[in-house]
Image 1: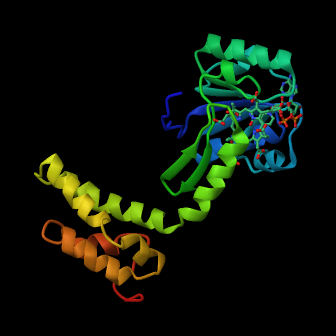
Image 2 (image 1 turned 180 degrees about the vertical axis):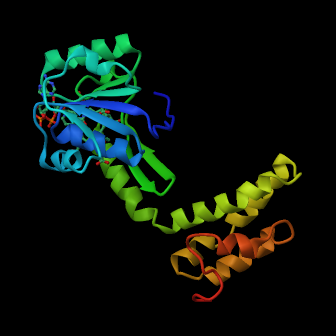
Image 3 (image 1 turned 135 degrees about the vertical axis):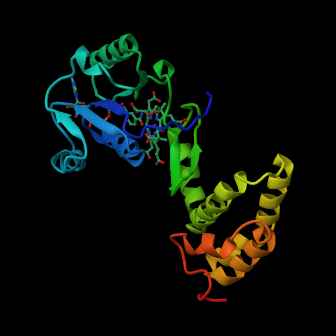
Length: 228
Ligand SMILES: C[C@@]1(CC(=O)O)C2=NC(=C\c3[nH]c(c(CCC(=O)O)c3CC(=O)O)Cc3[nH]c(c(CC(=O)O)c3CCC(=O)O)/C=C3\N/C(=C\2)[C@@H](CCC(=O)O)[C@]3(C)CC(=O)O)/[C@H]1CCC(=O)O
Ligand SMILES: NC(=O)c1ccc[n+]([C@@H]2O[C@H](COP(=O)([O-])OP(=O)(O)OC[C@H]3O[C@@H](n4cnc5c(N)ncnc54)[C@H](O)[C@@H]3O)[C@@H](O)[C@H]2O)c1
């Protein structure tokens, strides 16, 4: 297995089936801002709500091979082996990436257990050996990796964009980020000590970037008048 993160924003993704497994896959696709269409004679209550709210398109009928046309990625999530086979064939003919939820060996890709902290993604895969183990490890990460990591990621991104425009060597930039992270910054963010964190950012990047303005523009501002 080769891990990648896919940009599905605005891409048409097809889910065949409307049960609990389809529901989980749809939630993952919506979190990635994909354009989801679903084909199934019936829907779970949560999927029904999403269809009624217009967040997914729903064709209320059995799958036909033409449904695969134009899809970038397809999930076969029905409880019928013959339908699963038909979706696999149609997806392959349409050149779409396909996941057949009960045939791991036929999948172009498998879905890992995922922890999202904004854009920060942590995913656990077991190559299909034990999805239950993947879920347990995800729950463990959820306890250890708190929302302060999302704040730190936003902060680093806000510094990195202008920094990339400066005429610094690759190793010099790497050293700056190492200096930034080789500190108690996560603890300060966890404790709400933004002023302490801001002072550290100033010490590392202040001679190169307008740190005050960058921090003020972050959604987590203000950085100057919370717990010192
Ligand atoms: C991670 C997660 C992501 C998601 O689906 O979003 C995911 N399964 C999850 C949960 C889960 N799935 C199952 C159980 C019951 C316990 C158990 O059987 O272990 C639980 C536990 C639960 O419900 O908590 C049953 C199951 N799963 C598959 C089969 C078919 C087979 O193995 O043949 C069967 C047997 C069906 C049957 O009994 O007939 C197949 C796949 N499931 C995968 C992913 C892919 C491999 C990922 C990997 O391990 O690398 C793969 C290959 C294909 C795919 O779906 O992409 C999500 C956890 C989300 C979270 O909580 O964070
Ligand atoms: N990969 C995973 O994570 C995972 C986890 C658990 C179970 N499974 C397997 O996934 C399958 C689905 O599980 P579930 O709990 O969602 O089942 P389910 O019975 O709740 O849902 C099946 C859905 O498929 C629909 N369907 C049936 N025939 C169809 C057709 N011709 N066209 C379109 N839709 C059709 C049904 O209307 C229903 O909505 C099972 O085979 C199960 O063994 C996979």
